Image (cartoon, rainbow, N blue to C red; front, side):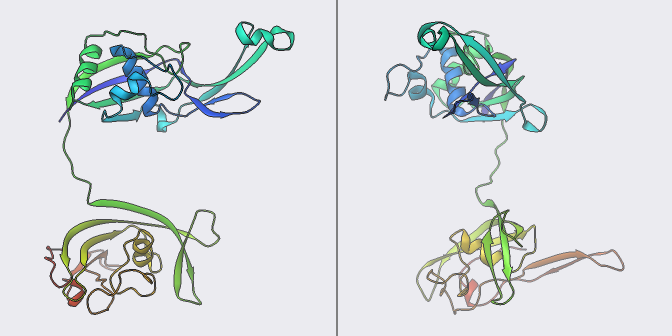
Length: 296
């Protein structure tokens, strides 16, 4: 896949948040997609906001672009500052004393690497303009006080990777020793600990007993919490077959009714010899019947 890559930066930027209070106007901490589409629309000559209740031309034309925004500042954080200035023209002249004090929060020295997938006519048009250092309207970083600097433009080849079968799930779990259960909490729940796992979909089949579809997952544990797999998968709407504790009221009676969970691979370093020990077994039983199980 081909993509346009360029660096977008400026001395300051202001992407106004909709919330306003008496102190000032605040900015988002990063450029968002609609703001970026506005910049790209200015480059190719599309109109901006005009009538209330109608999407601007740049949004209608460019909303389906496949875009990636990569922050370039250290740790992805852009410093902010409050800017105060006086406005004495227009409606501001009607203020007490004929002067309106405006406070705005600006981003300082923002920088991003932008990728646009070249898979449509609009993307090709943008790439041509940027590669030739041309624009119809001057691009700004949020408002016309902040000029946008576009440089290092190039056409790059992207590697295709498949990640649709891998999902990272991160929650906070709290164990209840009295009921021998764990429940989902958050970072502020007393006694809750972070629980993280990832999983891959390896196969699917129709259960011979229930006639319902079931999936085989390979789960990788990053943490080892009490009943972690059962709780996290149930919380994600995918309870384990046969799990009557955490899958109550869901489709958990697939197969013979036993818990369809198998420790298929266990690896650790021997505490004395330091040698890596690995134990592998193949899931068996009615719960896994009908699914082709790959090598673990």
